Image 1 (cartoon, rainbow, N blue to C red):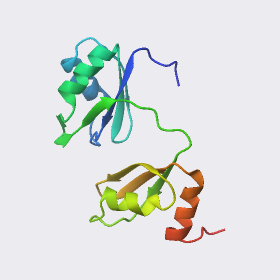
Image 2 (image 1 turned 180 degrees about the horizontal axis):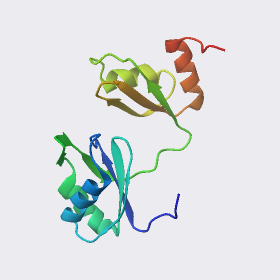
Image 3 (image 1 turned 180 degrees about the vertical axis):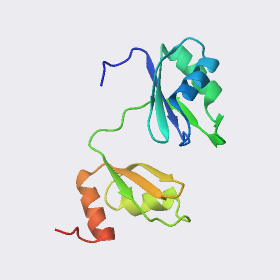
Image 4 (image 1 turned 120 degrees about the horizontal axis):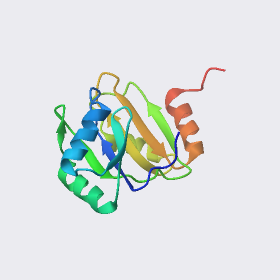
Length: 148
């Protein structure tokens, strides 16, 4: 991984699977010309590095809720993930389950920082629990003991 890019990092969530890095660069360049420093595209989200806070604010205002491949993307300032958290994957959750219901279920083991339901064929869910030990207790209670 190279050196940290200068400027401001913007988070883009809800990026559809077929989106390309060049599409995101073009989208941001059209909204705020000449200020995109770097585009880092992951699965279903991206980080766009812009030159300064003022251009990042304009990009957020113009692009938050923008349709990309028929999906609305969320554009906001990037925030660091809280320290001492654990991200837990929960699979095979009913399509009828809401993130609120999942959050309540995990709060028994400690504060839930974030809870996302990823809609799609995999029906994958993620929760971030502030208590690293809570994650293993959750797994044992709801998934049973791990095979040794």
